[in-house]
Length: 73
Image (tube, rainbow, N blue to C red):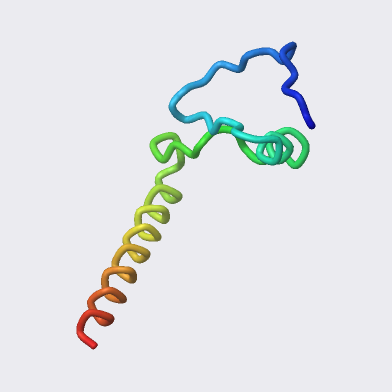
């Protein structure tokens, strides 16, 4: 079995940090280059923020319309 490496330095954890909960996510973060921090919309340019708000709104409205049409049938 694979034992945990106790000599590994403890990483500082913040709210926006995605923690590694198994070897696969650790591999993706360190080898594959998957980001370890979540995107902060407030730090993005205004155009990207508006696109994200539009995308989330369309996604939520689509889900609501799907549920309503499913309940009507």
